[in-house]
Image 1 (cartoon, rainbow, N blue to C red):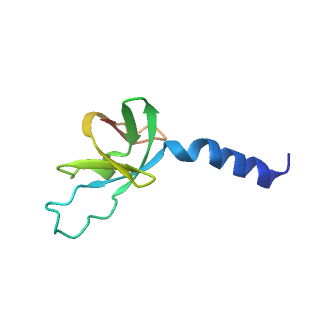
Image 2: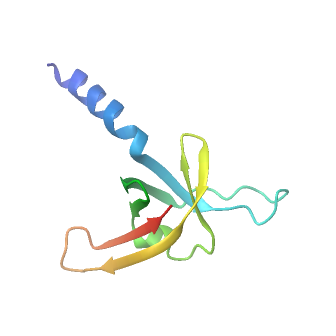
Length: 92
């Protein structure tokens, strides 16, 4: 399989699990908050992202292909010796 086809196939398989993380609007008339980062679906009720993405958010929301859902922080880890120095797990 040519490299381009493998890349396209990989994208089609994993892209549904990729999401953006941001803050909900403070009111319906408020300007939309831009996403602060991305994450991916770990299982049916958890999302993994980086601590700096959600560390300051009061009301984090995740967006999948234009569908928005509320989430809450369920755990975090900061390990300066790891290649993945920080991670955040959110419950959907």
